[in-house]
Image (tube, rainbow over all chains, first blue to last red; front, side):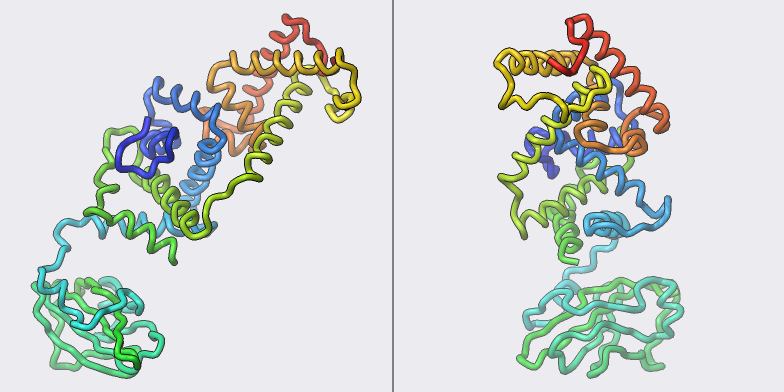
Length: 197
Length: 171
């Protein structure tokens, strides 16, 4: 019943079978097979009911935040589109751009701009969260092809681009912030993709 | 957030291998599939951090199953409070054997039911889900249909047990 490469507990059915059962889209024979297994397996019955509750709590039927699993499931749903987009992989040189110092990835969190609407509203202001023991932050903007457009440093958690830096509407840029800690280590936001509106 | 990061990391593993294995063959929606996969990954994360639960669960599960069987014996054999049944420890050998025979008969008749009906009984009497929750995960259109189906299945069980000579939960 299980499908390779899926997190399927031994002896239980695959995510495809379970999701098909929840969506009531399995053929009759497959549904009967799932019924048979469910009638004998308390663990799978519990999973079925819990998964159905999560599906019911999805945004289309109103937000109701429940356990951590629900939050993770819904957030992952939103981000999957980004993960699967084939054309968003930046050039190789951009991957090594942030720093030659070992960077603890995503120890800082980018706050704004996070999407096109925010980019239009932020008027070139970039904001991130404060990192522990960070004495200086460096904001770097990259072109879509990986070239550095602009870089500036501050001890604050925001920076506004100078007038000399013009972001062309419709263009794609990447930005990230490195934070230099007092002991010489670095933390960063990771690369953020932004389409300028 | 740790669970969230764990799930994302697992989904991205090997060039998003897990996500790419989803086959859009019409057997289910991607969002539902993702909820199932993500929930399992979230539990993996929890188990990695806190370990699996062991010993007491098995005891609880066994006890729950036994209680469910007793409730079913009660439901199929008339309105008798199972707690009023004679304590098997102090019962005579004959009474104890009769009680075991009744339970065996109920078990056999339950096992002979269609899988969907057995599932219905398990969801209601062993797992103790509400009729609404059962309707949500089964073919039943509404909780009313769940109650109606339960009444039918219990009626079938009563008739079959009566045919075996079991008319009461009391040995």
